[in-house]
Image (cartoon, rainbow, N blue to C red; front, side, top):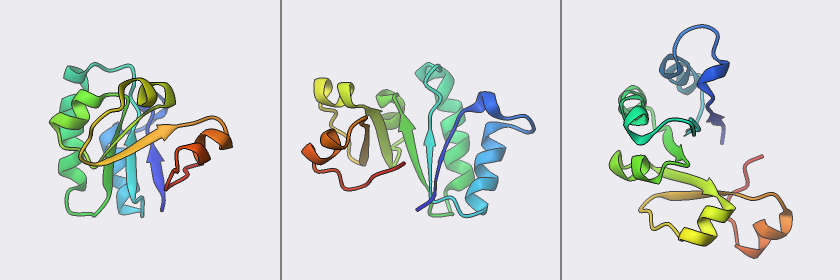
Length: 116
């Protein structure tokens, strides 16, 4: 699987949503929307635009660090830090991704997917 992890500040030409749409057309299987500095209110219009652009492609949308936005838009996935995962034990109906920094943490929690 090919994942795109976003950072809108690195885009020199076009918009983030344009880049995501082109990446999905080019074969990206999932988009991790990692715009951690945006509030839920700032993120939601972007998320709805992305979902609309990729809706018929089979690509999955995973929201990084904003649980509320992930729930509101019914994203396919939610990604959080290991600390948040342990502290909050988020209940999410889709895929939950967790950042870990050691192989031991990965193995201890029976991860099913490793993204490098």
